[in-house]
Length: 190
Image (cartoon, rainbow, N blue to C red):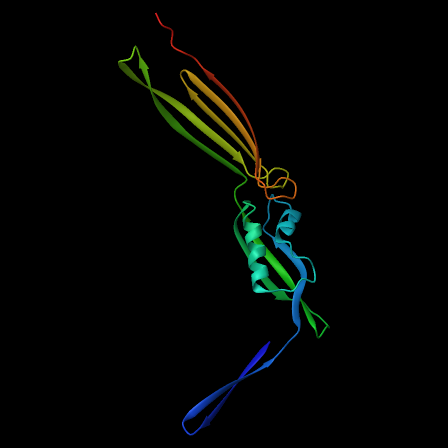
């Protein structure tokens, strides 16, 4: 759309008239994805859900950006459009450029534990321990996370593995598989 403002001055009053010339309709021409290190391009394109020829409106782009961000794979998602050369007077194909910044693929957290043990009902002992967690955010370029957790204390050991994905097939149903093993030793009564 092209806007022109025309001002009329008469007898101390001003009239403002806008003349609007409608231009060609903007449509999705091509989608270019950049910055998706470790994440497959088709994962981003599927989340965008912007087929070629779709009318390009602000709310369509905002929803597409939100869908890419909601995959949980990226800490930053920017969507911009650029005009592509065209010969059509009725449609203007636009290049949709999606710049993403993925979360680090691997995260390691660790810490110290302290718990209280009671023996014979009166004595209290603080038992130190260690805790560690390793998370891999993308597996095979897809939004599949693998988390391994381990806790170690004098009488208790826990190992847990979690495999999760935000979708179940094409449905937006978060799915998880949890495997856990624990071992606890009890103090002997004498």
